[in-house]
Structures are given as structure tokens and as C-alpha cells.
Length: 171
Image (cartoon, rainbow, N blue to C red; front, side):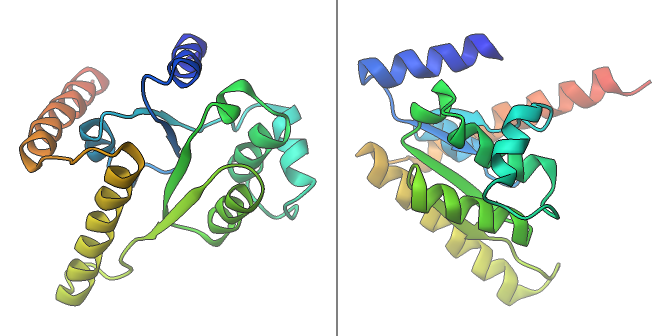
């Protein structure tokens, strides 16, 4: 919401918290919450000005979501200027290129990889290393250790929120 974006900008301006954005549902928000960062999911796919601005750098075959993510930086949206870092877990080539452009031109951004095979032990181990790297990067950004107990608490909290959303969304 616009109010939440304003709150993040104020936190950035007052130095109270690091402010990060993420672009994908695969980013573990439980770890973001545990890191005590203000976090915001960049989702501007309906804004035509941002889409057109993003297309000035991307290719026309990119989806509107990736164009609008980049467009929010090009059009200098206040929320984009308030960010300390952007994170994503790689799901498609278009988003990878978009985040690479954000990293090269606007704000530090990190891409983590998702495993491609289900129920494969080596893929599971690889994913764990990516999650641990994400946690370590957040600790370096904030200068604070993220406790496993805090992560567990936030997993329970977000799982309950998801359960409640499913409950009210099911006929």
C-alpha cells in the first residue's frame, strides 16, 4: 500500500532500519522478518508509465512485471530510492536480467538460485546453502545476527497467516 511505502521511506530517512525489496514469492519473508529489516515486495505490473520506462532497457518479450520492476527505478519512485538492497530467488531469465540491471544501475541486488528438481538430495542441499547465504547476507547488511529461534517463530507466524488466508479464500 502507499501508506506502507511511505513508512519505509521514513524509516530509511531516519536510519531506523535497513529497507529491502524482493521480487518473488520464493524469497523467504520469514528470514526477512527475522532480520528486522523493513521489507517490501515490488509488484507494480499495472502501472503503464513504469512498464514503458522498463521497456526502454529490456526487450519487448519481457513480461510486464519485470518491466515495471525496472521501471520503478527508472522513474525514480520514492520507494525505489529508499531501498538498501533488492533480493530475488531466480525463477526466470527475464527477472534475472532485470535484477542484474537494478544491481548495475540503481541499488545493490542479489540473485539466489532455486533448485530445478524436486526430491533430489543434491538439490535440497544446494537450496539449503542458498538459504544460508541469504541469511548471512542479511546479517552483513544489518550488522545483527539472525537467531534460529526467531526464524522458527516467524515461520509459525507466517504459516498461520497463510492458513487464515486460505480459510477466508475457500468457499
